View: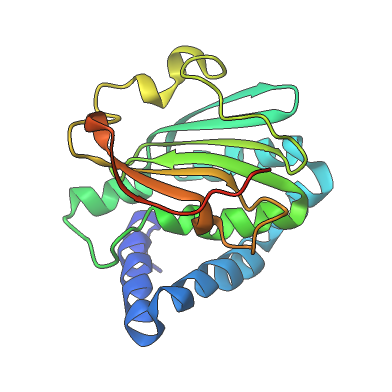
Amino acid sequence: MIGCYDFCGHYEWTFEWLRQQGGDDLVHQFWDKAIGQDSQQHAAALIAEKGFSGMKEYWAHTLAEEAAGYTFAEDPGVVRIDMHECPSKGFLLLNGLEQYSDYCDHCIGWIGPMMKKAGFQIHHEHNHCGKCWWEFRRSSDSSPASDTEKLAGKNDVRLLADWATKDQQIDVFRNAAHSTDDGSPFRGRIRYSGLSGKVICKATLRAP
């Protein structure tokens, strides 16, 4: 049996192998079906049953097991996670492992479709360096993402000096997995270049 962190290298290699066999569409199918609908079906069941409290129960257990550096924040109708140190991406960076072009995408790749089925949508950003944030709301909630510090306070990952450095790529998702989209959380992605604010590419954003 391999350890939790060692597994990440094999996980990431598999994403690239699948891409070579059938392109990114095959990778996205793997994230949705093999992860979201199979290995993490307990998460789907818990969140479908308990909603916001189920999210906190699932991620509190999972992230504690992974020894992640994270915080929870919540207001009525929203749960937020700020990831300051992702152990999974951190392991890859520490060991110089990079096969698939965007390992961080696999999280939104299985969480997005799962949340849609449970009646939720996502605001999310990741900086490809082990830091990200998530806000989960009901699919009927048209609220924008919270402003910096408003929900997470001093724990807001966007306050960190290394959150968005010059020419560092940030991936932004708004209303991902919304009930009006085609099921792909990648439809709403915007990529921009760190502090320069230069947009690298932009997908079509659908209004809630």
